View 1 (cartoon, rainbow, N blue to C red):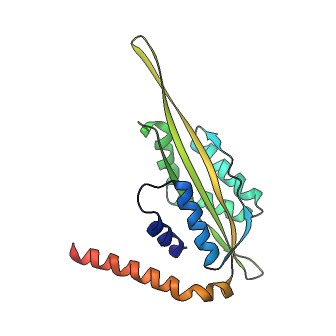
View 2 (cartoon, helix red, strand yellow; view 1 turned 180 degrees about the vertical axis):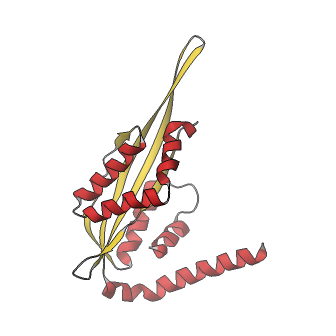
View 3 (tube, rainbow, N blue to C red; view 1 turned 30 degrees about the vertical axis):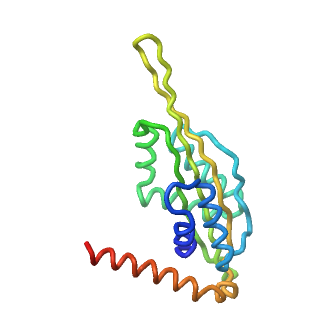
Amino acid sequence: MLYAELAANDKYPGQVSKKVWFDYYQGRLLKAGFTLKAIIPSEPLRVSNVNQLLSVSHTIIGRLGVERLGQLVEETYAALRLDEFAWNFFRGNVANSGSGILKCAPCERLDSGDVVVCLYGLRYSTTVIEDGFFFWSEFGKEVVIIPDGGVFAFNREVFENYRGRVHEKIGAYSDKILVRKLKL
């Protein structure tokens, strides 16, 4: 998964469409040994609070037949205190409209020995709406999330063909980071 992220960052550095970046990221996963088992429908949803965001995420992942992975998303949010960050975001820290992407990839080893990963991406955009009447202004915000991703199963045999490339890419990235730290 790190390989897919590094490859996507190299291919699309800087300000590029979040959708294009995420699609390329998923494509790299498929090339490196993952098989798509279920796809998350990319239907825009409006949310107005954190509970709705978590509920929507859990419901979408649960519909894919991976209830445990949906629970892992909620546990990850709680452990990383992302719910507090998200609450601040919804409560009023959004001064301007914007967009971004959040990805989460809980994984699980099934009884069959297969490893499945639920790559769950949320593209979001916010719009701040100002209604003014004489000297009085009211602000509201609309948050639209667009889920993306799918459930992928890891295929060791396919990965063997890419093992060298994956190690090379991660090694080159590690070397850059080490050099950067030494220069500081």
